[in-house]
Every structure is written in structure tokens, then in C-alpha cells.
Image (cartoon, rainbow over all chains, first blue to last red):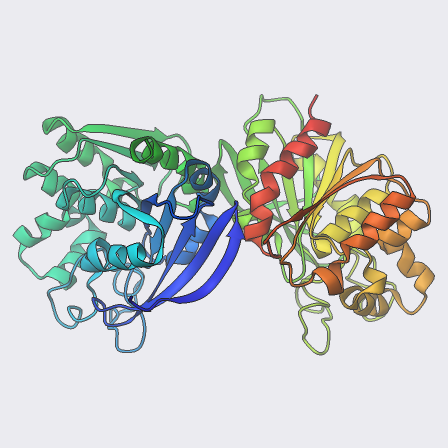
Length: 282
Length: 282
């Protein structure tokens, strides 16, 4: 069994909220993540909802501020929150030290470009390594997984769903970056992680993947009308257009007056958990 | 109108979560506090629930981690979280720099002893100054107030309720210090803030106040069985005994496996909000 260190553990909402550390083969670093396991009958397995966080975040932001536990406890869903990048000595960061690239900003891709390609392997980490580890150590039913995320993590959730057909029962997002290859955050990250070839970028871009034929049956997306990143970085209209053209059922809710913060996310988190639960729990 | 600066404001759970700063006449410092105002009909006033935080906390801990907004939005209750001490230049702290006294540890008393008496006036601040300010700036019905708190703030809530009969419709606490004059945290704080006269201490000690005849109709208290401070600092059995002797209806729930953290508080927060709401909202 792969080794897993329990960093912290608390009883909460009848279940166990834990923070764990392991040596990742993909990133070549120690990685932290959090897991909430609701109270359940011993010997049973539960569906799992993955949550991918946004720029600058670690597992801790959603774990502390996400308000997901009550709904997950009610519906019997395990909630897993990975980190957003490798961290630690030897992990290269953006030389300018900016917050939208490097540490806290792995963009859920496997970097092909030096010096990032050694450690920045968040696509394989989130899609393969961490699910295997979580299935070993927690009572997860691997046949019942769903995924959601926020901002950069919304991009991650959409792309994971589109790139791995059938793996996730449902996909949702809060204020996702839907078309990273066309917006400043994504262009900067993709150029440095993936190099100049734009045909590679399209494989990590939700709108481009949909345009190129990838499918999801349905999508739930919440986005605040007062989100400061709405027009420049998030561009929800492009997802709407791509879904319309490819006949993908998108429920895009423009939430009046909400911004990009966890005060927005936590407001609609229970909705998302219940929406996923309706698709995960029979 | 007393001046109030809006430091931050977010839409959340249909209402407005704000953080505010004002120059306090009681503490002689700038003070921060947070207020959640649910969506409501313009022109109407709402009941208010005060939340007093524990050692080391500011307004921010419960504001970010307390999971109170969904229930407050549902029941139409304003939620106010003050800071736990004066802060800033010129405010004396414990010379040893310990976390259980001084900054973040005002114990909701008006200090009589130098050098603390100038600024450490958290009893008058929470009981008088802040309610006046909040009533000026927010749609509060001052006839419908309740109070709760955690740990040192549970002590604060109990003592506020016992010292101001009729002011609060209901009083509850998470893991409160119930008998501060008999436990290490309280003995240290009371000696430095209030001086050596133990008869003064009794006026700021829930169990002593009840023994000396102060009354509340009923009390709701949750406490975790795995709280590391249970036996040495919190001593819930003493509150049970005092309430039994004075025929006060105490609902003390020993919550199996929970500790002292916000993972515990947030689990039972909605319960407390609804319990208060049943007494505040007709």
C-alpha cells in the first residue's frame, strides 16, 4: 500500500475531515490534499466528488471555507481537494514571482517545457495518481466519481471531464476559465508549461475540446455577475456558444451580485453537491 | 451618525457579509467586526445574533469558517462577530507574549488594572458601544437580540446574558469556559485585568453568577468529548451543577468525538442559529 501520512484529522458534520501528505511519483514532491469522509456503514464504499481549486489556493481554502460538509454528510459523498501545484525545494516558480503562474498555479496540465516538466504534472496527478491513492486508503467506489472546481480549478474540472469520457458521472464548475488558450492567465501558463504549439493547447482548453468533438452530456456552471475576472479571463459566453453548437446541455447560472470569492462558492456549494449526488447516489 | 468604514463586503447566501472598522470610544483603538445581513424587505428590521469568539481569534475566524450564513439567511437573522480584544499601537500585551492573555484574549471584561485598564474594555464594548453602533448602521431590531460564543467567547456570552437580564432572548455556547475564576486561563486573565479581589471575579464568572442568584431561563451548550481543554479549562460539570441547583434549564450536549476547532463549531452552528431563531423570530 502506498504510504500516506495523516497531517490533521477532525470530526466534523458526523464524519472525518482529514489532511494528508504523500510522496508523489508524478510531481516528485510531497503533496498535501484533504478528504472528507462522511459517517457510513463499515465495509460500504461511497461515491467521491473531486474539487479542484483556483489560482493561489491550496487544499486548505475549500476545506475551511467551502461549506461542503453538511451536504456531503447528508448525501454520503466523499469530498477530495488536491493542491494546485507541486511545492517545495527544487520546484521552479515563475521568475517574476507572480501569483498566476508556478506555485499555486499548476493549471492541471503535464508540463512539457523545461524547467517545469519535471514537477508540474498536475494532469496525471489529479487524473491518475491521486485517485489510485485515495481508492487505496479511503472507502471510495471508483465507479462513482464526479468532479467540480473553481476558476483555474473549474478549467481543470471541465478539461478532466472532457478528456476522460465516462470517468466522471457529472462535471460542474464555479466561475471556470473555459477558454484558457484565448485569455491572459491561460496564454501565459500554456506558453510556459506547454510551449508554443497551439494545437497542444487545444487539448487542455474546454471550449477548444468541445469544438474539436469532445463531449459531456451536461454541465452545471455558476458564475457571479460581479466577478472581476468575468470578461477578461472567464468568458462564459464562449462556453455557452460551444455547448450550443455541439448540443451539450449547459446550465449556466449568472448569479446576480456575486464575486469570485469563497463567499460566492460557499453560497452555491450545497447546490452543486446535491446536483452531483443526484447523479452519483442511486 | 457614528462613523463606520466598510473594509470589505461580499454578497453571500443572498445577503451581504461585511467587515467594518470604527474608532471605539471604549477601547480607544480602531476596532474591526463583521456583520452578515440576510436579504430582507427594505424598511424592515431583523433580529440579531451576537457571536463572541475564542482566544487568539478575530472576527475573521467565524466569518470564514463558521458556516452560519445559510441558516441566518433562511431565518432572517443578522449575525455580528466582534473582535476579541483591542489591538494596535499602544495596546499593552502580555509581556511574555502568550496567546491566552492580552491581544486576542480580552475575556469580555472591563479591566480595572494598569496597564490594561485604558484599552481592555471589552465588556462595555460588546454590551453597549457595539450594539449602539450596529443599530445605527444596520437594520437591527434592538428588542430582538440573542448571543452565543465559543470558548472564551462562550464565557463572554454566558456572562453577558447573566449580567444583563432581559437583554438577550436566548444564550448559547460552544465549548464555553464556564467557571473562569477557577481555571488556569481565567485565573491568569482575571488577576491581570481585574486585580486580586475574588469577589470582583465572581461578577464575570458564569457559574459564580448563577450561584450568586443571576438567572437565565434556559441555555444551550455543545461541547466535544475530545476537546483537549475539557477538564482543565472548560469544566462543563460545574455549569451543570450550578444550573441544577438553581433550576435553570440547561441543554448540555456532549458531542462524541468532536474537538475545540471550527470543524466542531461549524457542525452545530446551524442548530444554534435555528434554536435562537425559534426564540427571536415570531
